Image (tube, rainbow, N blue to C red; front, side):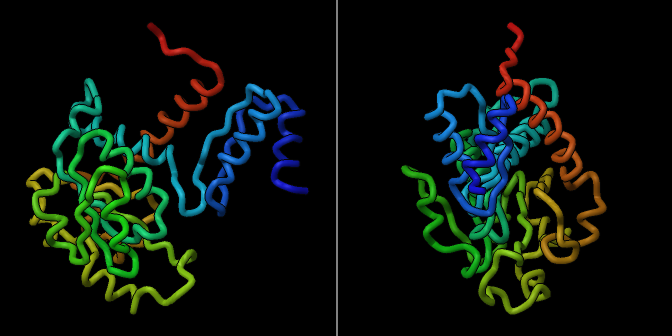
Length: 239
């Protein structure tokens, strides 16, 4: 049974929405094209595909940032000109790709930081018409950053020896309270989870609710995905 066969089975059952998470990039788009070809009104929600994107995580990260800046009226304009650092395994991260597109579109100043093996220079031109600062050292990316989005080391996707050791990664790129002193005084951390404790983030940072927004991300993820299901299922935004 092919993936398209599976999709056709769900459509025959009257499904209104297919939520697709797949190891290969482009699968949700392929299914959406097939659904359109069949003239079905069903929608496809990309829940993460290969090394492409993770749109719902990008949306919940945007909502978390904007809600922190103005809890009463979160809006994209709040991110204009704000420096945001994305740190870690950017090469294998679909979250990074969605966040980069979203944050640049919102007008944020996005800096990327990671080891050369996990952050190719190509990412400087990742968004057409924009040149992103790419740092192979952590400190320049952190200086003055209002938010830091750190990414999980995705060892299950690393087909080569891209890092000497997890200890060395933490030594050079792990976020600690000492390192965060380089950032804006009110800096806040985000992480899509799950966190490799003591690798991307120190335990001290993990346990500080005044410093990280990780639990808020989880909470907002429920609301954002509920909203997407409602809207894609035919719901309407109240006037």
